[in-house]
Image 1 (cartoon, helix red, strand yellow):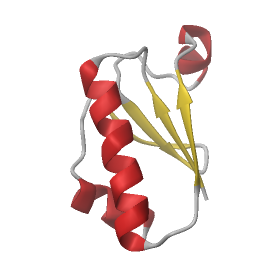
Image 2 (tube, one colour):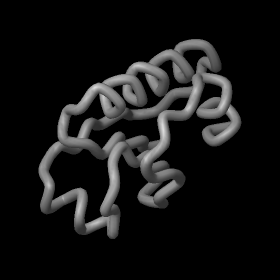
Image 3 (cartoon, one colour):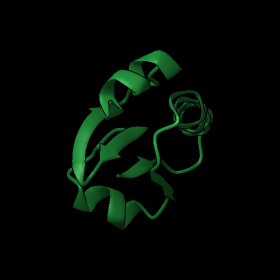
Image 4 (cartoon, one colour):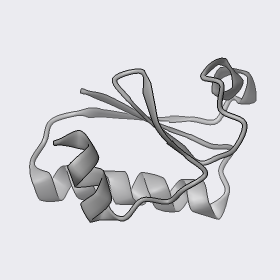
Length: 76
């Protein structure tokens, strides 16, 4: 599984990344986590609002900071 957090480094982006890390640790699911801050790469996903959560190259959410439990549901 490949997970990407798209965002330019704002507080919400950092919080989403932290929650993804916590969800992976809590669930025991193996995945690679990447933080994408390049605005051109973010736009390539069609994302116009951050943070965004990408799971296996599919946009799962835009503009929302999911809780750890919500992320576990998305990756399970």
